[in-house]
Length: 192
Image 1 (cartoon, rainbow, N blue to C red):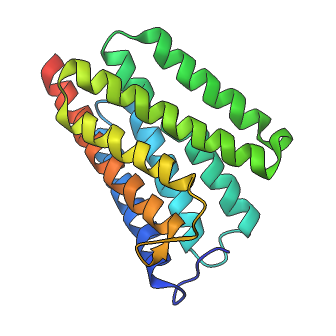
Image 2 (cartoon, rainbow, N blue to C red):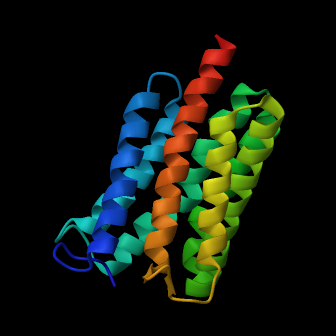
């Protein structure tokens, strides 16, 4: 169910945190990385459509979250790989995300869930690998938090630490996005 203002506060706060962090990251990275800025903006828009009353149906919100996952997250990783000279991985991640976005209608709900979690984990692992080899501490934290969100989403339990599992995942995504935006900034400073 889509959270409504005045509804469960943990859901509203987690959507708000993810939206604000993603929007700030998009604005701060637009000059140096248009791809990452677009990825952050997709995350912010997906969080906003879930919060805003009358902006869309539950299916529209799920579609927005799907696009933010399969296109937005590969866009984030694209720039990280591209700047480090790993253009084949950058193109492969982005191309795979585009194919999944188009094929989403044919996968069904369970297939979309598995594909979204796989994209999240692949992006997290590739960011983590590049960050380890380049010594980018923020990238390591960002990759670890994105990976934690992906792994937490695979758990069977509906609640973790007295909060809904989806809220914990959004908090982890927000922390990962914050760290990843700093990783991009640090990476750009190293290359200048």
